[in-house]
Image 1 (cartoon, rainbow, N blue to C red):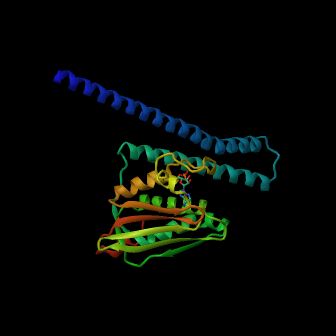
Image 2 (image 1 turned 180 degrees about the vertical axis):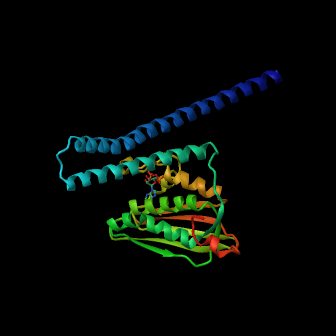
Image 3 (image 1 turned 135 degrees about the horizontal axis):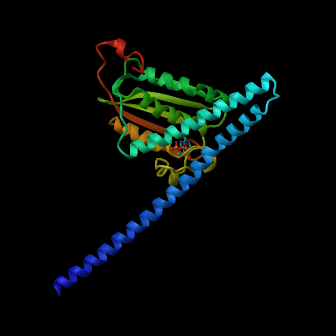
Length: 264
Ligand code: ADP
């Protein structure tokens, strides 16, 4: 009977494990379905605009000013498509453990300055002031382009979810003897406590109408972890959000020239 008892227990255990697995599969299928429908929409919007404008221009009869406007929109929407596809490819590479980093010594101040330059125009449109605070001579070991991608994503989110005429601060400060913390702080719409635990999940968006894939934070977090760092988020609904990236510091390179540009 003892054997029978154990056997019964194991069947019960197995049944609940299978049940749990089935629920997980249903849940992850639901997440994937939601993602496919939201990404299809994200891809269709720029494609519709590109198709509309190219057909209009092909039909001819437009003055140079109108033609330039149409071409400008086609170019901008193509960039948006490329960005979306790159984000999906990066995510899939990270999922399959196939993201290759090109490691060098990165001058943090240069990297953050370049980040700010890249999002400057977008911030300007909302009259958002971007502030940078970072000491000279702070170096981290990593892939400059991938780290820039992380900070661009964070500042881009901060701009997207900030009100007009506000400020965003990008601050680097020593966190411990061997680590630096880079803070991206906005005073935008904020995230509720319930959503804050989920925003770093792949595909998750508080409001799907804001556009985007819901992959940015998941990608950023994984890239930071590949650099032996970590990412923390604090937020208050209606007050603003702060994302902290903590990275290990490295020694100043002997050959200063090699670390002058973040792309090297
Ligand atoms: P997306 O490409 O949709 O922006 P992310 O993974 O970068 O994807 O962000 C996921 C969601 O987290 C966003 O859709 C938004 O709801 C929320 N979020 C991210 N950053 C901020 C922020 N700075 N302020 C408010 N909400 C944010």
